[in-house]
Image 1: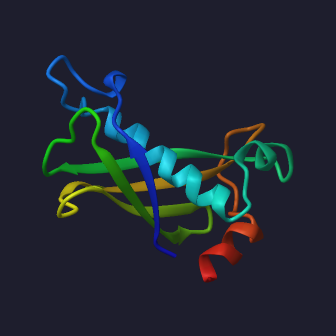
Image 2: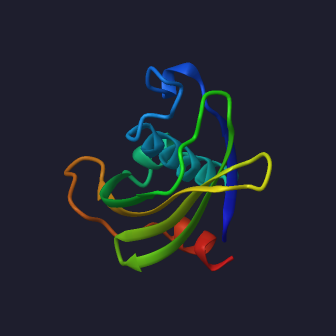
Amino acid sequence: SAFRWQARVYWEDTDGGGIVYYANYLRFLERARTAWLRERGIVQSALAQEPGIVFAVASVNVEYRRPARLDDLLAIGCEPRQSGAATLVFRQDIHRASGAGELLVEAQARIACLDAATLRPRRLPEAILEVLKR
């Protein structure tokens, strides 16, 4: 279930030279994962209520290839895979959406499913597992 989501680079995303600040790529990656869930009818605030789970980044590995710049339109991809009973791994990338679609960033994020009350690991809900099968 590969997925693509677009975002524009705004001034707030950049350093003084109009280049995206390295840590802000994590925000683009996070928003793409959230958009992936929403497109499949899964809203994180609802999951926190019933069945009482939240997601937390357990690890992230990022390879920066080329810089994104002010006003660039970005295409952010994510491809989730179940990694364990309570974890997902997302392979993600960021490309410049215009021109040749130049690869800017490659990343892998391991996401843990946690009980909202105790913050202890909890099995992925069936709704997520069903989405992963599609």
